[in-house]
Image 1 (cartoon, rainbow, N blue to C red):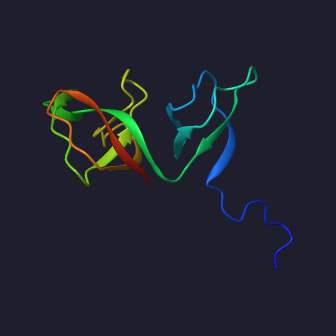
Image 2: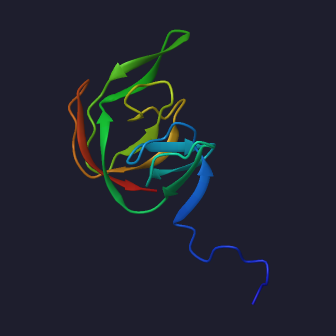
Length: 122
């Protein structure tokens, strides 16, 4: 067996996520997950990369309006791909243009609305 194996199942990782609070969705580059604790003073935080979490999701995405990308309302349905969108207050939506793939909706959210639904992490 390889002697350089660090984690066999890296479902939980300690990463630097300054300001994260327990239960927050987070993204560090392409690594996404949910904070399992408040970030320490140095920014260290344990995030969970697998599982199903109840998260606030917004029924928006981004569309090209002539030459400008703009937010538009759209419903979220079960099975839809969801994205982490650092530009928004509610971080999870359907912004596949500028967001980072986060997981799949296991509930519904009305167009332009926001609700707490179950999300299956990628």
